[in-house]
Image (cartoon, rainbow, N blue to C red; front, side):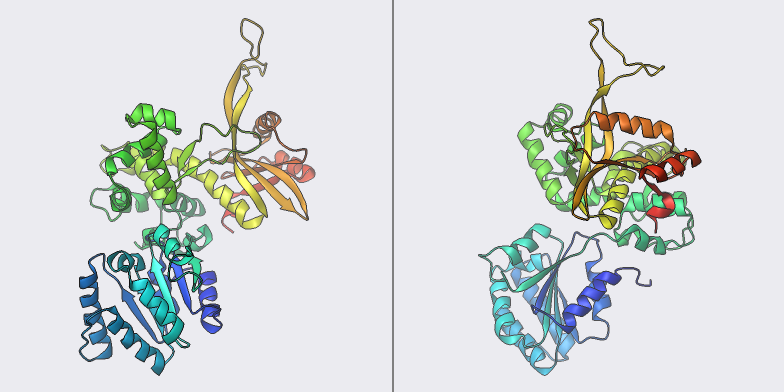
Length: 461
């Protein structure tokens, strides 16, 4: 399969290779983000040694290194300890400039606590003009190994974080899909390249049915795998994630529906946030900071809990799940719109607003109770961002519409009413994102009043 995307990352690695400020680099990113594939692409036509550690004991890792080095050097290697292994690496570095890759580095750190100290000595005294790349999916452990002052590698390794691929990059995996289907694919899979490795699909519904929904399909159990691979006891995390996906998205309601006490809920949520599977909603424009509201940010995990675990009797049929899938897309569309702003504007802060607005009847009149007091209802603004432009800051209020209707003055009036209910600064600006486009008269109004309109085609540029 041809290599797609990651041009900025490759350019950075090439610049580091040509002019390294530090001779060691740590490639940090979640599982299945494409770290090993990126490394292999970067290493093409470069002298290198790519070592992948085992999730096993120190002794078994040392035996594996003996076998690997014997095959690489074409002579038998016997290592009494890891110092012997690095003696071989020193000789390779002396002969020619080599990139040494230590993949799944957290495994060896857990198995052999002295390994980082030995590596430090190698970097300081024996590496010469060769280079070292550390790679690992345990983000917490990788950060600790290179960033904590008490660790041997502190100050010797340049951190390089690998994020998800962009939607523009991921379009190349399925070029024959329609623009809308490419968007829906990204809203389901996110920018995790592994999920795009099954070729040949021309429609979104066929892709998701054949690779996710059907029993025994390649990614049918991916949501379960994400949980069981990283989290114990898994049952607690299943309950928390089910609660969030069903609307019990703050700790007190989670505790009520799961039966877990608040302390356990908090502990589980902290771990999910650490793994970037869940995130708290960032309050903006005077929104109350308590209670904290959580949402599932990993898209495959969100699909698993919002669609698959609710539609267990669908037997892999897309049509049975369509309503749930499209509802989920409406939610994840907001995340995609936020990414659009982050990539194109100087965003200082971003989140959303949830708060009370006056309730109105079908004629548009404010409703009052028997005592004559205004009745309020909860409402939200999809995205609120503080943006800096030419030294000046303003607040941008955004409505994101994924429905099959054009956006016009109805949506504008509703957003304006909600903006007036916020506690925000004097410079307020509006933006509308729409999958189905905009009313022509509203487009002209927006141009005249400095309102940002973002279409589906804009999102995919």
